[in-house]
Length: 275
Image (cartoon, rainbow, N blue to C red):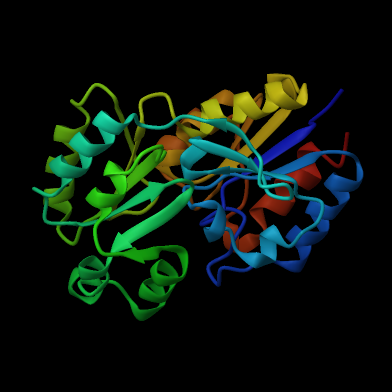
């Protein structure tokens, strides 16, 4: 049996530069879904950060969120897999991040939070108005993330850092990679994304496949960024976008067109719909 699950990164992959799903790509998704193929958005965003143009597609039932740390049924809101920091790890890491000259946010109970004082600093870190609007729409405001982390039964899946200075980012990356319980990745040139060691898109994807009774060989995954590396490696057929990082292209089974050239549609048409 051919491909039964297609995992798709969003930004730079399924979404074009205008943050839209092109008509050709939408048609390819619909045709694959009509064949019984599971279409799975796979993103560093939280559940609430998945755009309506994707979450509103009724043939999509599951999503990998927060870099695969939380896999959800977007129709029932059921969590089918999760890999979180424990409370001590979360408190230590959040305290440690305050030393860096960067904007920090944190995913708690499946939603991204940013402190009010951090929101006010966004323009100072070279963010465009479009990017600021996106961050405000995908993050909830709070006075103190530390106070939230101290509450009972909170589940912390991910923390993000956004730098304005690339050298400071590299220095922080080197330091953070030495913390044994932290997995470091990125989806943007200026950010770092921190998950619990073992929480990544690849492991989240394989956990969902097992839950659905789908074999690794029946999975296709498309991505472009560092946080897609594990997913491309885990899939039976890993596809890199033409606009993706060279490191992703190097480990992929094939390279498709760019996200502005209907690369996802091309991959589905070539490797799924022709079966």
